[in-house]
Amino acid sequence: MKIDKILPVIYFTPLMLIQVLVVPYFELNGIVPDLILILLVFYTLKYGQLYGIILGFVLGALTDFSTGSILGSSMFTKTLSAFIAGYFYNENIVGTITKSPLFLGIIFLASVVNAIAFSLIANFDISLNLFTLLFDQGIFPALYTTIIASIILIFTPKRSYI
Image (cartoon, rainbow, N blue to C red; front, top):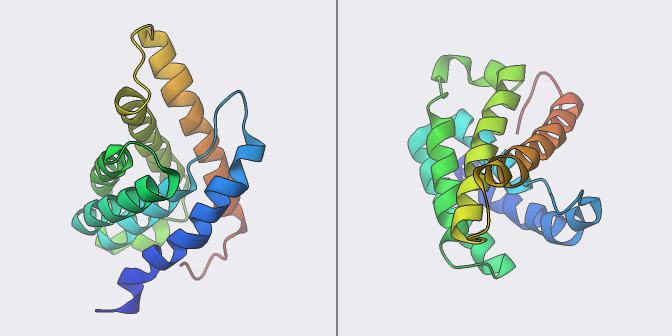
């Protein structure tokens, strides 16, 4: 097995430390970006939908074990997000799609799906209405994640990628 296929799992540890220890300081009204999802979408677009689904399951399980959330909630939502992002995989334009604004759109879509599914599974509240679920639990966290991804996209070198 190539080392390239296991790199996301290696990158997971420092990203999870940043996600748990640093990102809460940048919380805006209870909303935090999902750095693990950015990593997952990147590698799904790089290696394909099946690889992304397996990676989403693994990273979701590691996230559940690391954060102590309901076991299986992140596994399901990360797998579902990788499944959605995998539809945009094209082996002929891998290098260009991860450097384009389309990458941010894919992250936004996957993040909306991830956030809404996670709030339905882990944070289900009977008093939530559709507006609250869609905007407060879905679109606002997705926008925050997309903004962080755009900052990462700006500062990555144009010729090489992870």
